[in-house]
Image (tube, rainbow, N blue to C red):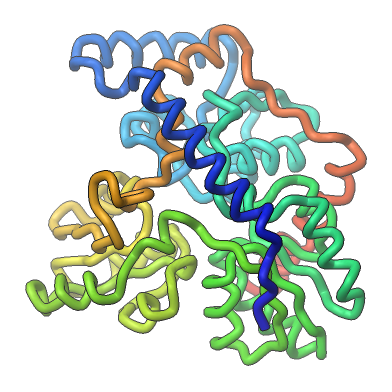
Amino acid sequence: MLFRSQHTASKLVEEQRLIVEDYLSRSPSANSSDASDLNVLKAEIKAQLKAKGAVLIAHYYTDPMIQELAEETGGVVSDSLEMARFGNNHNAETLIVAGVKFMGETAKILTPHKRVLMPTLEATCSLDVGCPADQFSMFCDQHPDRTVVVYANTSAAVKARADWVVTSSIALEVIDYLDSQGERILWAPDKYLGNYVQKQTGADMLLWDGSCIVHEEFKAKGIVDLKNIYPEAAVLVHPESPDSVIRLADVVGSTSQLIDAAMKLPNQKMIVATDQGIFYKMQQAVPDKELLVAPTGGSGATCRSCASCPWMGMNGLGNLLSCIENGTNEIFVDPKIAEQAIQSLDRMMSFKAEHLS
């Protein structure tokens, strides 16, 4: 069952997309400077990280130069949950989170005693924006008999309303477990991931009508056409993609799982249906293989994302340096919300430790 979310939610996503376009048009990218300027910026960032006792934590979808900096300075490049776990375990008292806002919030929830800074607080996520906490809470109240499971790509307030938080790497296992316990599920916000999990597990799931503007744009016909050109290529698909795309996949999985699949599959070519930011780490893992971006529904002016998250693109070397130098864009989470959200996050982490270790 799919719940058609209020018009307000989809309108918010479109408004945010326009804000991003305006932001990027007004802000010259630090990452488009010439090589000498970039080297100066990178050296300054490294010096500031050391001076401030901070560690850089970057998501797979950020600019390759930011990912490279994280690796070179003892930080990490990973998915959202591992980013938060790394920050919790690291001895640095200041965490610099390069990604989108919910990732900074998750880090703060798991490490309330640490300072969490981000290059920009304007970088959000269509899944997060499309699931406003007040509307979601009303939806949950209408279905009190269902166990509430939310994807990690949500605000702290939505996580606080949930019984469980899951990532794409563990969603199947958690839902399968809850289904075996006779639980009926209320799922949010990604309808495509929810539909994939529902089909795989057979669970009774009521789905919020949200989507990722990057993965929603991958088109089955384009992948079929590319596969005809490269019949030997394996197709790797993130489960936030539409069902028609998922059906073409050799492997469906989270960012970490797709990188692992690229390493294990014998194919020398990979058609990859997720944000092309992943190519930095994937190519590191398989330097001798050819990675191909899965076609999207548009190009140029007609393409909303072109396989690159516009919000991730708001993270640049310039605003990264500024936030470290000046201590700006600090993440704060209401302690009451954090106290509730940590419970749903802890359930997931305890489940992983008990069932998947």
